[in-house]
Structures are given as C-alpha cells and as structure tokens.
Length: 348
Ligand SMILES: CC(C)(COP(=O)(O)OP(=O)(O)OC[C@H]1O[C@@H](n2cnc3c(N)ncnc32)[C@H](O)[C@@H]1OP(=O)(O)O)[C@@H](O)C(=O)NCCC(=O)NCCS
Image (tube, rainbow, N blue to C red; front, side, top):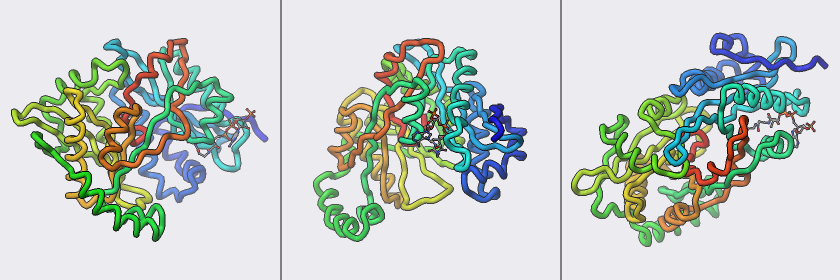
C-alpha cells in the first residue's frame, strides 16, 4: 500500500477530482456539481478570507478530503479569528489508514501558521471520537436541536402510522393551547437586508460574551450558498423599530423527506421573552403560509431552548459536543459562552 500524500485542492483542480470525489461520496459524477460548487463557495468565496481545502491522495487517486473555512468572532468586542473544520470524508476502502488524521494535522499546522485562535467543528460520532481521543480537540458545549411541526401529520414520516395518528390528535390541541401571537409586533419577510439591520445586530449581538461576527458582507455570502435558499423575518414594534430578526433556510437540492425550514440565526433586542415569542410566532405563521411541514432550530442555552419548548417545540440534546482546538495556544474557555444558534450546522 502506497503512503498517502496530502495536498491542497484548488478550484482549478475540481474537474480532475470529480470522478474520485463522486466515488468517495457514493454518487454519480453528474450529481457532484452542486457539492463541488458548495466547496468552492465555502473555501474560496468567503469574504473573510480563503480557507484551506485539502485531499489525501493514493498516487493520483483522491481518497479523502477535509477543509477549514474562516470565521470571525467577537469576544467581548475584541476580534478573534477562527475557522470551522469540516467536509471530512474518507473513501470506504481507505478508512482506518490515517487519511483523516493526517489531513486534520495538516490543516492544524497550516492554521497555526496563519495565526487562527480556534478551529472548531460539529462532528458526528464517528469523527468526533477521533477528534477527541486522538487529535487533542476538546469538547466545548452541547446544544439542543428543536423541531416544531406545523403540519402535525408529518410526525408520521418520523414515526410511521402511530405518528400520523398522534399528529392528527395532538396538532389541533397544540394549536389551541399554544396560539401563535404577534402581540404588539408586526413582521415582514424579505430576501434583501434592511438598512437598519447592521445597527440592530451591533446592538443585539456585538456585546455578547462570544459570537460570530455578522458583517453585511459575511451575511450576503452566507445567503449565497448554492444548495440553499434563505429568507429573513423582520419583526418591528408599533413605532417601526426593528426588534427581532431571523434567517430561515431551506434545502433546495438532495433528499428532502418532508418540507422543513431551519431557523439559521435569530436575534432580538431588547432581550425579552415576549419579543422572542413574537419572533417565533412570525416564523411559524410564515412557515404555515408557505406550506412548510416542520420548523427546526438549534439553541445552545437551556434558557432559550425552554422558550422554544413553551411554544410546542420538541428538544433533543446533541449527542456529540462542539469540539475545538487552539492551534496557537489561545484560551478556549472564552468560547464556552458562545451564543450558538446554528441549526444548519454551518449557517453561521
Ligand atoms: C470519520 C472518517 C472521516 C475517519 O476517516 P479515516 O481516514 O478512516 O480515519 P483515520 O484512519 O485517520 O483514523 C484515525 C484513528 O481513528 C480510528 N478510527 C477510524 N474510524 C474509527 C471508528 N469508526 N471508530 C473508532 N475509531 C476509528 C483509526 O483506527 C485510527 O486510529 P489509530 O490512529 O490508533 O490507528 C471516516 O470514517 C468517514 O469518512 N466516515 C464517513 C463520513 C463521516 O462521517 N465524516 C465525518 C463528518 S462529521
């Protein structure tokens, strides 16, 4: 067996790796175009800077990939550079040969040279064990995944016929007990950013202990992911002041079991339970209007998760934690208070 060679994959190399990449993913090469355009978008279009996308090669054959994409944080107002690690996959015939670990070590060395303070990821159980047990990553925190049916019959997709029956009984009861109320607020839906969003976000999240920076350029890039579409909800009080903002994303390609949307990001100001409830009501009313079956979200803190639960969301704690490493020895404790609201695993 030849030893594996780790090399950077640039956009110009994509045509030559398409068939190997398709084999790794177990799909036809013709189905790879969107996947490759997502990789191009993630690693090479990011306005914060170029990421690193690397492959492990056995001779000329690509057998594994991994990459890091740049993320900028504000920790108590101070900018800190980080990167998210992902797109890690090894060809089934080449697993257990060190491809993944060599790629991660390669990326960490490059990240240290570039001065990144944190490299983090949201792994599944398979890769999570390797990050934690063999590659010196540490667990940072868990989160709750939340889901709220709009069309309660879609529970049947998840739990078969009993789910359908439970849905048809539970749904009307839940809708009766938990009416969606906007109260004194009104909302609008937009694909474009409103002029007051920047100052709203500055007020709402830049003073957080730790959050990912949401500059207009960055948000615009996030909305340009090739296989997703996004719309925004703007919640305003009776004076027209922006009080809540949420980004809702939906998958436009691939295997879609039932129609669901994901709350990719949501902020309110002032931080009052009533404002968040009105924002969630606006999201659900809009989901209903668009004929969506289910609304999904992610919350890092129990406090926020509980507000979702009080509106009929089911919560499931994540199995794996968010894992991280500090390539240049930065204190990772500062990231434990990260306001993590990324239901898309990479929305922000
Ligand atoms: C997770 C995955 C990327 C690991 O790739 P890999 O190239 O086989 O990993 P490595 O060979 O570098 O394994 C590193 C170590 O973990 C061990 N290991 C690998 N897979 C393992 C598993 N499923 N359970 C436990 N240990 C495992 C290896 O034996 C090796 O141990 P060693 O250093 O003592 O020899 C690969 O299994 C995969 O592609 N899975 C499907 C896609 C996926 O789930 N990606 C993660 C997305 S979050």
